[in-house]
Length: 357
Image 1 (cartoon, one colour):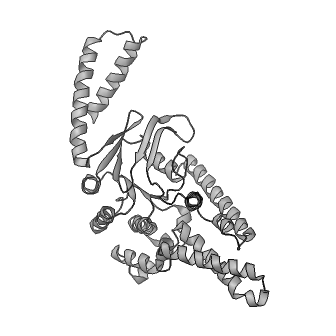
Image 2: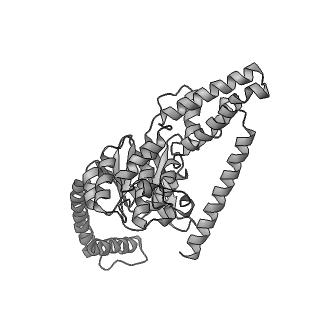
Protein backbone atom coordinates (compact mmCIF):
# COMPACT_ATOMS: atom_id res chain seq x y z
CA UNK A 1 0.00 0.00 0.00
CA UNK A 2 1.40 3.42 -0.95
CA UNK A 3 1.58 6.44 1.33
CA UNK A 4 -1.43 8.01 -0.47
CA UNK A 5 -3.56 4.92 0.20
CA UNK A 6 -2.44 4.85 3.84
CA UNK A 7 -3.34 8.52 4.21
CA UNK A 8 -6.79 7.90 2.68
CA UNK A 9 -7.33 4.94 5.02
CA UNK A 10 -6.41 7.09 8.02
CA UNK A 11 -8.88 9.78 6.94
CA UNK A 12 -11.65 7.19 6.46
CA UNK A 13 -10.93 5.63 9.85
CA UNK A 14 -11.08 9.06 11.49
CA UNK A 15 -14.37 9.87 9.70
CA UNK A 16 -15.89 6.57 10.85
CA UNK A 17 -14.79 7.18 14.46
CA UNK A 18 -16.27 10.70 14.41
CA UNK A 19 -19.54 9.41 12.90
CA UNK A 20 -19.77 6.68 15.57
CA UNK A 21 -19.14 9.19 18.37
CA UNK A 22 -21.77 11.54 16.92
CA UNK A 23 -24.30 8.70 16.72
CA UNK A 24 -23.60 7.61 20.32
CA UNK A 25 -24.19 11.19 21.50
CA UNK A 26 -27.47 11.35 19.55
CA UNK A 27 -28.57 8.02 21.05
CA UNK A 28 -27.96 9.29 24.59
CA UNK A 29 -29.81 12.55 23.89
CA UNK A 30 -32.74 10.88 22.06
CA UNK A 31 -36.29 11.65 23.17
CA UNK A 32 -37.75 8.14 23.23
CA UNK A 33 -41.31 9.47 23.23
CA UNK A 34 -40.75 11.16 19.85
CA UNK A 35 -40.70 9.24 16.58
CA UNK A 36 -39.02 12.19 14.87
CA UNK A 37 -36.22 12.11 17.45
CA UNK A 38 -35.73 8.36 16.99
CA UNK A 39 -35.65 8.81 13.20
CA UNK A 40 -32.51 10.98 13.53
CA UNK A 41 -30.66 7.80 14.56
CA UNK A 42 -31.53 6.05 11.29
CA UNK A 43 -29.17 5.83 8.27
CA UNK A 44 -29.43 8.79 5.90
CA UNK A 45 -31.47 6.97 3.24
CA UNK A 46 -34.06 5.84 5.85
CA UNK A 47 -34.33 9.38 7.21
CA UNK A 48 -34.92 10.69 3.67
CA UNK A 49 -37.61 8.04 3.07
CA UNK A 50 -39.35 9.00 6.33
CA UNK A 51 -39.29 12.68 5.38
CA UNK A 52 -40.85 11.97 1.98
CA UNK A 53 -43.58 9.86 3.59
CA UNK A 54 -44.33 12.72 5.97
CA UNK A 55 -44.93 14.79 2.84
CA UNK A 56 -47.42 12.07 1.80
CA UNK A 57 -45.11 10.83 -0.95
CA UNK A 58 -45.68 7.13 -0.30
CA UNK A 59 -44.81 5.98 -3.81
CA UNK A 60 -41.09 6.69 -3.58
CA UNK A 61 -39.53 6.81 -7.04
CA UNK A 62 -36.41 4.69 -7.48
CA UNK A 63 -35.42 6.34 -10.75
CA UNK A 64 -32.05 8.07 -11.01
CA UNK A 65 -32.25 10.79 -13.65
CA UNK A 66 -29.40 13.29 -13.36
CA UNK A 67 -29.11 15.51 -16.42
CA UNK A 68 -25.49 16.47 -15.97
CA UNK A 69 -22.68 15.90 -13.47
CA UNK A 70 -18.89 16.03 -13.47
CA UNK A 71 -16.53 13.54 -11.81
CA UNK A 72 -13.01 14.55 -10.81
CA UNK A 73 -10.20 12.59 -9.17
CA UNK A 74 -10.06 12.97 -5.35
CA UNK A 75 -7.46 15.75 -5.54
CA UNK A 76 -9.35 17.51 -8.34
CA UNK A 77 -6.38 17.34 -10.71
CA UNK A 78 -8.14 15.35 -13.45
CA UNK A 79 -11.64 15.31 -14.92
CA UNK A 80 -12.89 11.77 -15.54
CA UNK A 81 -16.49 12.56 -16.52
CA UNK A 82 -17.51 15.93 -17.95
CA UNK A 83 -21.11 17.21 -17.88
CA UNK A 84 -22.59 13.76 -18.52
CA UNK A 85 -26.01 12.34 -17.59
CA UNK A 86 -26.56 9.53 -15.09
CA UNK A 87 -29.72 7.53 -15.69
CA UNK A 88 -30.65 4.34 -13.81
CA UNK A 89 -34.06 2.69 -14.03
CA UNK A 90 -35.63 0.64 -11.21
CA UNK A 91 -35.22 -3.15 -11.47
CA UNK A 92 -32.52 -2.70 -14.12
CA UNK A 93 -29.62 -5.11 -14.71
CA UNK A 94 -26.83 -2.91 -16.00
CA UNK A 95 -23.11 -3.21 -16.45
CA UNK A 96 -20.66 -0.32 -16.34
CA UNK A 97 -17.96 -0.70 -18.96
CA UNK A 98 -14.85 1.33 -19.76
CA UNK A 99 -11.07 1.10 -19.96
CA UNK A 100 -8.95 1.04 -16.82
CA UNK A 101 -8.69 4.41 -15.02
CA UNK A 102 -11.80 5.72 -16.78
CA UNK A 103 -13.51 6.35 -13.42
CA UNK A 104 -15.64 3.25 -12.81
CA UNK A 105 -14.56 2.55 -9.22
CA UNK A 106 -14.52 6.24 -8.29
CA UNK A 107 -18.04 6.65 -9.68
CA UNK A 108 -19.19 3.75 -7.49
CA UNK A 109 -17.47 5.24 -4.45
CA UNK A 110 -19.00 8.68 -5.02
CA UNK A 111 -22.49 7.23 -5.51
CA UNK A 112 -22.29 5.11 -2.34
CA UNK A 113 -20.87 8.00 -0.29
CA UNK A 114 -23.55 10.45 -1.47
CA UNK A 115 -21.10 12.68 -3.35
CA UNK A 116 -23.01 12.84 -6.65
CA UNK A 117 -25.04 16.06 -6.78
CA UNK A 118 -28.81 15.48 -7.17
CA UNK A 119 -28.53 11.71 -6.58
CA UNK A 120 -31.76 10.65 -4.76
CA UNK A 121 -30.99 10.62 -1.02
CA UNK A 122 -33.80 8.16 -0.23
CA UNK A 123 -32.28 5.38 -2.35
CA UNK A 124 -30.53 2.68 -0.33
CA UNK A 125 -27.20 2.07 -2.10
CA UNK A 126 -24.73 -0.69 -1.23
CA UNK A 127 -21.23 -0.85 -2.73
CA UNK A 128 -20.10 -4.48 -2.81
CA UNK A 129 -16.32 -4.72 -2.92
CA UNK A 130 -13.47 -6.49 -1.16
CA UNK A 131 -13.76 -6.14 2.62
CA UNK A 132 -11.93 -3.25 4.26
CA UNK A 133 -9.94 -3.27 7.51
CA UNK A 134 -12.83 -2.07 9.69
CA UNK A 135 -14.98 -4.99 8.44
CA UNK A 136 -12.58 -7.70 9.64
CA UNK A 137 -13.25 -7.69 13.40
CA UNK A 138 -16.19 -10.12 13.66
CA UNK A 139 -17.04 -13.70 12.83
CA UNK A 140 -18.22 -14.60 9.34
CA UNK A 141 -21.87 -14.86 10.43
CA UNK A 142 -21.65 -11.73 12.58
CA UNK A 143 -20.13 -9.73 9.74
CA UNK A 144 -23.06 -10.56 7.45
CA UNK A 145 -25.80 -10.12 10.07
CA UNK A 146 -24.37 -6.79 11.24
CA UNK A 147 -23.91 -5.42 7.72
CA UNK A 148 -27.47 -4.05 7.41
CA UNK A 149 -27.28 -0.38 8.50
CA UNK A 150 -30.97 0.03 9.36
CA UNK A 151 -31.26 -3.28 11.20
CA UNK A 152 -28.29 -2.36 13.37
CA UNK A 153 -30.07 0.80 14.51
CA UNK A 154 -33.44 -0.92 15.00
CA UNK A 155 -31.87 -3.59 17.22
CA UNK A 156 -30.38 -0.96 19.56
CA UNK A 157 -33.50 1.21 19.58
CA UNK A 158 -35.79 -1.76 20.27
CA UNK A 159 -33.60 -2.88 23.18
CA UNK A 160 -33.67 0.63 24.71
CA UNK A 161 -37.44 1.04 24.34
CA UNK A 162 -38.05 -2.45 25.74
CA UNK A 163 -35.91 -1.57 28.77
CA UNK A 164 -37.89 1.63 29.32
CA UNK A 165 -41.25 -0.17 29.08
CA UNK A 166 -40.11 -3.06 31.28
CA UNK A 167 -38.76 -0.65 33.89
CA UNK A 168 -41.84 1.58 33.92
CA UNK A 169 -43.20 0.04 37.10
CA UNK A 170 -40.08 1.14 38.95
CA UNK A 171 -39.43 4.49 37.19
CA UNK A 172 -43.15 5.44 37.23
CA UNK A 173 -43.24 7.70 34.12
CA UNK A 174 -46.29 9.79 33.22
CA UNK A 175 -49.00 7.75 31.50
CA UNK A 176 -48.51 9.73 28.26
CA UNK A 177 -44.79 8.95 28.32
CA UNK A 178 -45.35 5.23 28.85
CA UNK A 179 -47.94 5.16 26.08
CA UNK A 180 -45.50 6.89 23.70
CA UNK A 181 -42.77 4.37 24.57
CA UNK A 182 -45.13 1.47 23.87
CA UNK A 183 -46.31 3.01 20.59
CA UNK A 184 -42.75 3.57 19.41
CA UNK A 185 -41.71 0.06 20.48
CA UNK A 186 -44.54 -1.36 18.37
CA UNK A 187 -43.46 0.80 15.42
CA UNK A 188 -39.82 -0.33 15.72
CA UNK A 189 -40.88 -3.98 15.91
CA UNK A 190 -43.00 -3.51 12.78
CA UNK A 191 -39.99 -1.90 11.06
CA UNK A 192 -37.82 -4.89 12.04
CA UNK A 193 -40.36 -7.31 10.59
CA UNK A 194 -40.58 -5.30 7.36
CA UNK A 195 -36.86 -5.87 6.68
CA UNK A 196 -36.95 -9.48 7.98
CA UNK A 197 -34.75 -8.38 10.87
CA UNK A 198 -35.82 -11.08 13.31
CA UNK A 199 -34.75 -14.01 11.14
CA UNK A 200 -31.47 -12.36 10.10
CA UNK A 201 -29.17 -15.09 11.42
CA UNK A 202 -31.19 -17.82 9.73
CA UNK A 203 -31.20 -16.01 6.37
CA UNK A 204 -27.50 -15.17 6.56
CA UNK A 205 -26.62 -18.70 7.66
CA UNK A 206 -28.46 -20.30 4.73
CA UNK A 207 -26.70 -17.99 2.29
CA UNK A 208 -23.29 -18.70 3.79
CA UNK A 209 -23.83 -22.47 3.73
CA UNK A 210 -24.47 -22.34 -0.02
CA UNK A 211 -21.19 -20.40 -0.33
CA UNK A 212 -19.28 -23.15 1.51
CA UNK A 213 -19.40 -21.97 5.14
CA UNK A 214 -20.66 -24.65 7.52
CA UNK A 215 -21.38 -23.86 11.20
CA UNK A 216 -17.66 -24.02 12.03
CA UNK A 217 -16.81 -21.78 9.07
CA UNK A 218 -19.48 -19.25 10.04
CA UNK A 219 -17.99 -18.98 13.54
CA UNK A 220 -14.49 -18.23 12.22
CA UNK A 221 -13.12 -14.66 12.41
CA UNK A 222 -13.05 -12.97 9.01
CA UNK A 223 -9.36 -12.15 9.54
CA UNK A 224 -8.60 -15.90 9.25
CA UNK A 225 -10.05 -16.12 5.72
CA UNK A 226 -8.33 -16.05 2.34
CA UNK A 227 -9.10 -13.36 -0.23
CA UNK A 228 -11.56 -15.63 -2.06
CA UNK A 229 -13.49 -16.50 1.10
CA UNK A 230 -13.61 -12.86 2.14
CA UNK A 231 -15.12 -12.01 -1.24
CA UNK A 232 -17.82 -14.62 -0.62
CA UNK A 233 -18.59 -12.92 2.70
CA UNK A 234 -18.82 -9.54 0.92
CA UNK A 235 -21.30 -11.04 -1.57
CA UNK A 236 -23.37 -12.60 1.22
CA UNK A 237 -23.50 -9.15 2.85
CA UNK A 238 -24.67 -7.55 -0.40
CA UNK A 239 -27.56 -9.94 -0.95
CA UNK A 240 -28.48 -9.98 2.75
CA UNK A 241 -28.84 -6.17 2.73
CA UNK A 242 -31.03 -6.11 -0.41
CA UNK A 243 -30.37 -2.44 -1.26
CA UNK A 244 -32.37 -0.51 -3.86
CA UNK A 245 -29.19 -0.15 -5.91
CA UNK A 246 -26.36 -2.66 -5.66
CA UNK A 247 -22.95 -1.61 -7.01
CA UNK A 248 -20.67 -4.58 -7.71
CA UNK A 249 -17.00 -3.89 -8.39
CA UNK A 250 -15.23 -6.97 -9.82
CA UNK A 251 -17.27 -9.40 -7.66
CA UNK A 252 -15.76 -12.52 -9.29
CA UNK A 253 -12.24 -11.72 -8.04
CA UNK A 254 -10.84 -14.83 -6.27
CA UNK A 255 -14.15 -16.74 -6.68
CA UNK A 256 -14.31 -20.41 -7.62
CA UNK A 257 -16.69 -21.63 -10.33
CA UNK A 258 -19.59 -22.70 -8.02
CA UNK A 259 -19.50 -19.28 -6.31
CA UNK A 260 -19.63 -17.52 -9.67
CA UNK A 261 -22.69 -19.59 -10.61
CA UNK A 262 -24.31 -18.68 -7.26
CA UNK A 263 -23.59 -14.99 -7.95
CA UNK A 264 -25.09 -15.27 -11.43
CA UNK A 265 -28.31 -16.83 -10.10
CA UNK A 266 -28.57 -14.20 -7.36
CA UNK A 267 -28.15 -11.37 -9.86
CA UNK A 268 -30.76 -12.85 -12.18
CA UNK A 269 -33.31 -12.79 -9.35
CA UNK A 270 -32.29 -9.52 -7.71
CA UNK A 271 -35.35 -7.42 -6.80
CA UNK A 272 -33.62 -4.04 -6.88
CA UNK A 273 -31.27 -2.62 -9.51
CA UNK A 274 -27.62 -3.42 -9.92
CA UNK A 275 -24.68 -1.87 -11.71
CA UNK A 276 -21.88 -4.34 -12.39
CA UNK A 277 -18.20 -3.86 -13.22
CA UNK A 278 -16.52 -7.09 -14.26
CA UNK A 279 -13.92 -8.54 -16.63
CA UNK A 280 -15.93 -11.79 -16.68
CA UNK A 281 -17.61 -11.58 -20.09
CA UNK A 282 -19.64 -14.73 -19.44
CA UNK A 283 -21.19 -13.14 -16.37
CA UNK A 284 -21.90 -9.91 -18.23
CA UNK A 285 -23.50 -11.84 -21.11
CA UNK A 286 -25.69 -13.86 -18.75
CA UNK A 287 -27.02 -11.24 -16.36
CA UNK A 288 -26.93 -7.76 -17.94
CA UNK A 289 -29.66 -6.31 -20.15
CA UNK A 290 -28.23 -2.78 -20.46
CA UNK A 291 -24.74 -1.33 -20.81
CA UNK A 292 -23.36 1.99 -19.59
CA UNK A 293 -20.15 2.82 -21.43
CA UNK A 294 -17.63 5.35 -20.11
CA UNK A 295 -15.91 6.86 -23.13
CA UNK A 296 -14.54 10.31 -23.95
CA UNK A 297 -15.50 11.51 -20.43
CA UNK A 298 -19.15 10.67 -21.10
CA UNK A 299 -21.53 7.88 -20.06
CA UNK A 300 -23.21 6.40 -23.13
CA UNK A 301 -26.25 4.15 -22.84
CA UNK A 302 -27.00 0.95 -24.76
CA UNK A 303 -30.38 -0.74 -24.21
CA UNK A 304 -29.13 -4.22 -25.06
CA UNK A 305 -27.28 -7.20 -23.60
CA UNK A 306 -23.50 -7.21 -23.41
CA UNK A 307 -22.97 -9.52 -26.38
CA UNK A 308 -25.06 -7.30 -28.65
CA UNK A 309 -23.33 -4.22 -27.21
CA UNK A 310 -19.91 -5.58 -28.22
CA UNK A 311 -21.14 -6.10 -31.80
CA UNK A 312 -22.73 -2.62 -31.95
CA UNK A 313 -19.67 -0.97 -30.43
CA UNK A 314 -17.31 -2.71 -32.87
CA UNK A 315 -19.39 -1.36 -35.79
CA UNK A 316 -19.38 2.14 -34.30
CA UNK A 317 -15.62 2.07 -33.78
CA UNK A 318 -14.97 0.74 -37.29
CA UNK A 319 -17.07 3.50 -38.82
CA UNK A 320 -15.35 6.13 -36.67
CA UNK A 321 -11.93 4.73 -37.58
CA UNK A 322 -12.70 5.00 -41.29
CA UNK A 323 -13.89 8.61 -40.87
CA UNK A 324 -10.75 9.51 -38.92
CA UNK A 325 -8.48 7.90 -41.54
CA UNK A 326 -10.08 10.11 -44.19
CA UNK A 327 -9.60 13.17 -41.98
CA UNK A 328 -5.93 12.34 -41.29
CA UNK A 329 -5.19 11.81 -44.96
CA UNK A 330 -6.85 15.11 -45.81
CA UNK A 331 -4.98 16.99 -43.07
CA UNK A 332 -1.51 15.42 -43.24
CA UNK A 333 0.24 18.78 -43.15
CA UNK A 334 -1.99 20.57 -40.63
CA UNK A 335 -0.13 23.06 -38.44
CA UNK A 336 -0.05 21.66 -34.82
CA UNK A 337 -0.73 25.17 -33.44
CA UNK A 338 -4.07 25.47 -35.29
CA UNK A 339 -7.46 24.02 -34.37
CA UNK A 340 -7.18 21.62 -37.30
CA UNK A 341 -3.76 20.52 -36.08
CA UNK A 342 -5.03 19.87 -32.56
CA UNK A 343 -7.94 17.89 -33.98
CA UNK A 344 -5.48 15.84 -36.01
CA UNK A 345 -3.46 15.04 -32.86
CA UNK A 346 -6.62 13.99 -30.96
CA UNK A 347 -7.85 11.79 -33.79
CA UNK A 348 -4.43 10.24 -34.25
CA UNK A 349 -4.34 9.40 -30.53
CA UNK A 350 -7.80 7.80 -30.80
CA UNK A 351 -6.66 5.71 -33.77
CA UNK A 352 -3.57 4.47 -31.93
CA UNK A 353 -5.71 3.40 -28.95
CA UNK A 354 -8.22 1.75 -31.29
CA UNK A 355 -5.57 -0.38 -33.02
CA UNK A 356 -3.90 -1.19 -29.72
CA UNK A 357 -7.22 -2.46 -28.39
